[in-house]
Amino acid sequence: MPNTEDINALESPEYLRMSLAAAMTLGLKPGRFHRNAKLYCINLLLTYRGGCAARCAYCGLSNKRKGPYSSKSFIRVTWPTHSLSEIISRISDRQQRVKRICISQITNRRSIQDTKDICAKLRSSFDIPVSLLISPTIVSNKDLMDFRDAGADKIGVAIDLATPELFDQFRGKGVGGPHHWDTYRRCLSDAVKIFGKRNAGSHFVTGMGETEKEMVSAIQDIQDAGGWTHLFSFFPEADSQMKDRPMPAMDHYRRIQLARYLMDEGISRAEQMTFDTSGRIRDFGLSQDKLDRIIDSGKPFRTSGCEGYDGEVACNRPYANSRPGPDIRNFPFPPNAEDIHRIRRQMRMAES
Image (cartoon, rainbow, N blue to C red; front, side, top):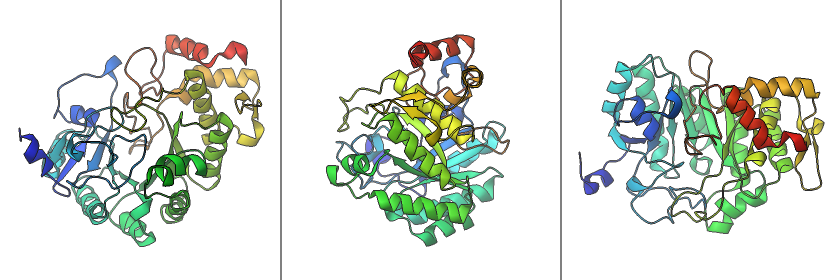
């Protein structure tokens, strides 16, 4: 294995970091998933000695976090570095396990051309769809068209925060960062036009000070604009500016999960839901019988992510925003009856 100094010198496009789960899936790292979960998307991350120019308060890749970029964790786990040629070889040997590939940019201008080149290389190597998680701060409308021409079929824009004020506090002026709410929303709108409805969308993170009503409204806005949404729970990254902030209460997260699913599936809308004076969801706009059937299906509580070539969610990121165990927040597999019972307790259904 290369020493730390060597790892710091390994840069994209020849080298990429990948999630620990992806490395395990490709046989590059040992390990087993809790409850035999399976990952079907290889999540790749561009890597440069200069790292990411952004200063997002909750992100482990922030340039305000001490240490070399190659050693910084991201969404709770390490991201080992491997050559693109080795990644392609490993995927080639495991194509029955890999149903999608996702390339994540960082806010580094070198990542624009590298994303195009890596995407084209992967698409010429496999008949496997490729998603891009982009940094709108450095991406132009022409870049979006180039991404499409390189073979990408889906675009993700991690808006993360539910309101412009929270976005500015944790990603913009509040932390001396380069990101702007309007830039992210405009880029997402452009991506929907170029890639088509439901082929571009946004990630959101709960537990950042938003009310449930604010998050529901933000999700509905994206869906009305033709996008999809994926939901995550805040997790305190070690050594980040928000390392001491607690995760959001489980009932808060479960209610937003359920609301997002109902809106995403066209079953209910934000304006059909009711909220108390603190912005907490009190009613989802459905009869109790119908709501019970949806909860019992377990589908609202599974990880939302881009589909693979079989139409099923491939990017299920096992345990990316919570530790394995009874308090799984995003299920990477169908919840069983015991899980559903626990979810109902977590939602405090008796109080609704």
